[in-house]
Figure 1 (cartoon, each protein chain N blue to C red):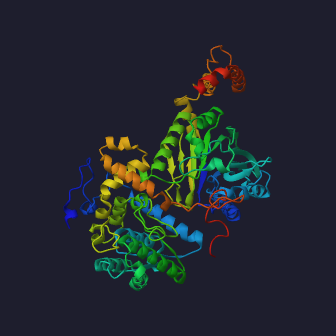
Figure 2: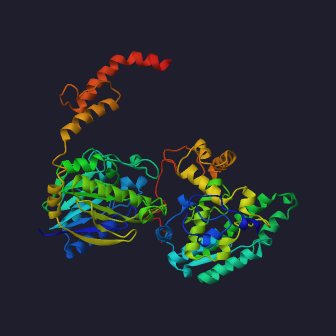
Figure 3: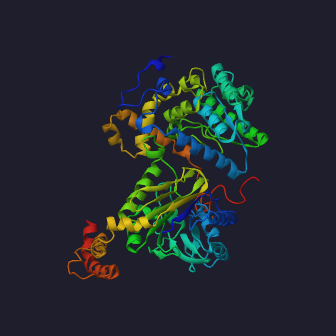
Length: 325
Length: 307
């Protein structure tokens, strides 16, 4: 099998400067094509920069924006993942990853998990995506797109793998912090990400492609360190920390089959069990008593919630009495 | 100096002694040790990024001859080249002559531009007024720090450079700083490094040993030292602040870890009472959109650079 050449565009986007970043994307797509890449991956919000605050609405683009179309037009015979701010027709603003292929916008993943703690304030400025799904690619593999914090939630890589993804692509704007000497490569953030990516690759037996930006915005410095991890959990490539560059990595997609036959974890997944237990857990976390999975029927979370709401309504007076004591 | 002979408190096994181990307050304890090559890279990117995004090519630093401003001068030189750095030496007539000699040593080693501005006439003229004759040393010290700030910002116009801050994390957290004086800057590359981490960086980057080894001092009056005035040792207070602030330990946790209850309480008060020094002053909310409240933009965005 022909190796897949992945180009990791570890760039430093200019904050709020859509035109400059678009020009850079065009330039690097051309460069990657010349270098024979099949998949080009840009970082989260590569078209806009990260710390946008109120600028978010000013750099937002609709899916049918001519600038997205122009970028897609550069992808004949190529696949590219780009990060942008998406405005939906009802004017919600999302952090998004687009898959551009053969001149078209093929798929958009909206970031589901928006960190709003510590140095992050995403929920203030962005709406959260609600879908996690893999997508067929012209590369002959299914891709699972995720954006940065999406990977800090176990369900995302699991769902993408169960949705038959062969390659998980995480695009990030990860701020480097915790520069303690005791950390691997001297950076706590890098240690955590490296651990996660190797774990996910091994547990989902997929390739994991991570593209993280570099550069500085306000107080924070993005650390780069983009990587490609094989389904065995072995590192195929690690880009340098903090250096800007277009890094090329060849991967043997045949590894995927070999690993999945040797280690059939995906075959042995029990999504039905997971779903049943999740329904119960969702029910209980919502504060409703009882175990909805006991009756053996798989009810949708929605019907569980409706049933729960009725029960809560019936009990309300008792609750009030307790609260007033 | 007696402090140099004082034993470093007992700590768990540590790597072989380095030059920093000979410094008065010791090297950072294990949990505070940083990877200096990563920190230097991040700070270099930060300095270049701040200048580029603001549309400036040059920087200036108020160089006292102490470890903080010396380290900043080295970091700026490393990031953008010494020819783009102006060091301003701003002695007062009571300043320790050794401070000036140390500052000149740094300038000579880096090969950067430098200027000496004696602030004595300005400061003395102000306090010559009989109404101000009773001013306390703290008042005078604050006035000196703010005079230096005014001189720095005035020179930033002529030099066409940004003022680089030199306050470290320890003094910022305990509020051992003059608001709108030494804490004024366009950006600060070392404000997230504790004093002992500043030392570790200074050793790594090659700041002259004499500067690293001397007792830290604001040099606002003769014989002043930080540790004597504040009644703490940096090695201890850095570690305390790390666990209190960075690692979110409660006072009870800290005492259980072996920190003196009195110190925990006192440092906690210092941090709380200086909160205002670390924040932009509040604006009375009147209109629909208020700067810093619900008008929130990054300070650098398209069109915001000087050129």
